[in-house]
Image (cartoon, rainbow, N blue to C red; front, side, top):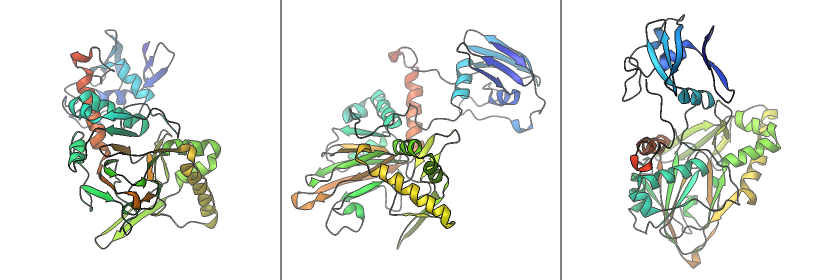
Length: 383
């Protein structure tokens, strides 16, 4: 049902969901060529100066899937009902498209993908991106052990993130390594580089050699840990989502500083990011009572992050790789016995917008591909 009301236009869908759309919201969203560039979707006029008393003169069905609207300023447009419904149900854009599945140590099967297929098929690459959206990580087999193959994998998505450490880093374990990741000791679950602005969005890690004893990779779903904390201690969850924490790294050539809460929420209340890096964090100075509450909450969260029930363990073999969402997944490894062999991996970072853009471009292309038959899901409303 579509009707004009005092506040704008009400739509009531067959499932009973109803929403009143503001006239100005509808007017500035118009995809008519006179309002938005068809290529970029950017508006061609300054809608901030539209009349504040703008009203809807007429509104009614347009075909079986749309609604046509005429406004008091003379503009007219057509909207897809499904697009308007998505704006109500999911008002914020997705980073990666796909429903998240929270997991623990019992995740089975693991999201493995064949590298040759991912290189050869846009559909297979889209499946890989879908696994990143769903699980926060994806695994690859069949990459071989050529040192440059990591760059080839990354190029399937786009440009790598270059830092003060370069584009690709070699992670070789040795007894006297200058960095914790280069030693033989176990690495606790953590996100990478929370002291960067912005922090790395995704981590790509390619195994060239892993013949030593130990050296298993560990992954923890940080969103699962955050939801577990919220369920068992809502007060602790609130403290960690509201308390600012600073992160810092310094060497002779760089000083890197940033801040954020250990659990970050999106405006709609969903967990948007987890920061857990107990080597570089320092909570801001506050009252003793506030810090006592924070330290108690952090300990409770850490116990979940370290727990066996949330920790997934597997060993990367030469020619295998993983990609992890650095805003969600905490990664680490078990201790390495260097007397039994060597461990050599290559690592690079990629910004979030590069990965999400690649997925959405693939979705747009494959959604309308005749080879795939009907559209996978409805596209944006076009007026």
